[in-house]
Image (cartoon, rainbow, N blue to C red; front, side):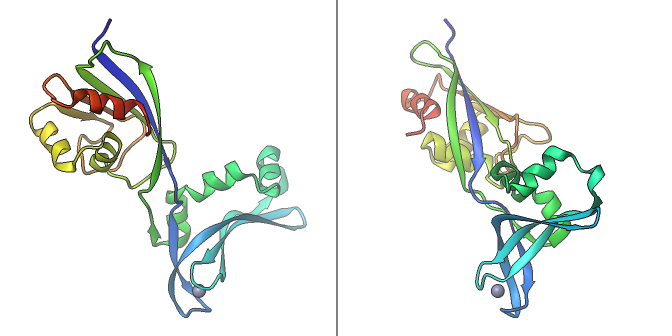
Length: 210
Ligand SMILES: [Zn+2]
């Protein structure tokens, strides 16, 4: 049996990105949040659709364009049905598309609050001497790698940094191996637990969400 504990962490962001826009009623730049509602408007054969945002201070609305003057025949019927039904999955996908939001709104604030679901991929013999964490991140988050590891493994951020400095912790991810960058889909973190006095506790935290 192997001495490696492999786990999968699915990191699901809690708060969707919010644009900062000029609010006519507040007469100030305010943060707007998604209302979760889509509006579809037909004008002959042309359709417009928007995701409705509300000012977080006064509830004034801002319509985020999803479809603009699109001919109905060029729209995927299933997509149109989801728009009309206000499908929660579609709403979530649109709300978390921060790149698109930035193109429509300019200044966008992103958040780093997440829920982490933990699954075991393969068990080690006890005690585990190596921990491998594979991260699935379906939507972008600003959460930094060091904060994710510190929170979920119940370790201090300085301990995480020390582990990396001594070569006992490695992050492999497309584009970056840095602890200070945001968590990305497909990221893999490997931690050598052989010398860690509290390795049982770390292994336990890695596999369970409590
Ligand atoms: Zn307002």
